Image 1 (tube, rainbow, N blue to C red):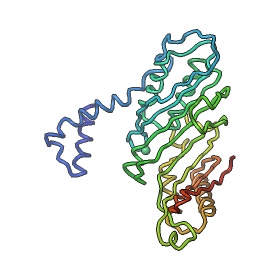
Image 2: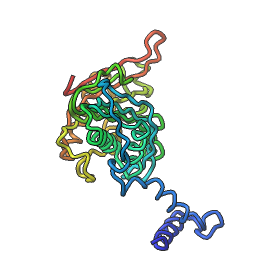
Image 3: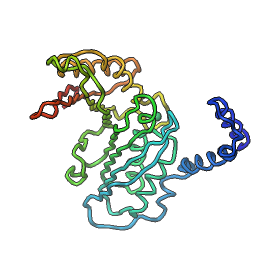
Image 4: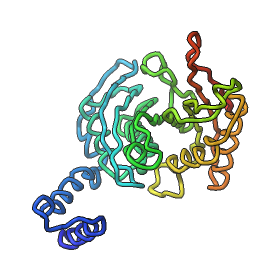
Length: 303
Ligand code: ZN
């Protein structure tokens, strides 16, 4: 097994112009295999096994909120890391989880080949099932190296994904300004500031203005983001690139109209890929005006 992986990696090194026998590279396939195994050691164990007996009686029905849980995972499309912090909140019914088990559950699912959407859902469903919680809320914020290092090469974009089920948890406790109140997967993609020709002043017509896109999608919960099937999710990387290619080089006078065009483009993309989702798009235009810093416009299928 290790021998064939070594040969594969050596062929890969040769293909990009390297000498696999170079001193620094000789042991690299072996080291790669070890680190890859470590990054994917979340297979072969269940949430129940991780939690073991660490469920403790508790009469206090108030929500338990654990914030800033770090996670590191590998994107299954590009095998590049994505990482960030998660918030897990649940409403206990008579039993609470040992707090370290929440961290271990996040780790269990993060150390697999993942999509951030599925990771969020798997954590939420596991907490609900294992703790028999009355309600669960999970939010994850991740930076994806496949977006930062390649493709659109944006280093400051962040992806936020949400999971909610059962009884609602008071959003003021969640430390998040946007707690989705819908019983659906709510996904938020925030791009970096992309250059766009937008505006009615002559200055704006001549130069590129940085515009940030905030895309929110409500995905029907019937979507099996919990299955391990690529056909069941949206390729957000491709979606953002598609918007970038079809819209961001065009010239618009009004932010309102540009937002509408982006919205239509995204709807078309989802249709072309046989996906269903309610879409909300916000474009935020940075201004150089001394008194006004930005203007933004939102169009969406949901409020
Ligand atoms: Zn990726």
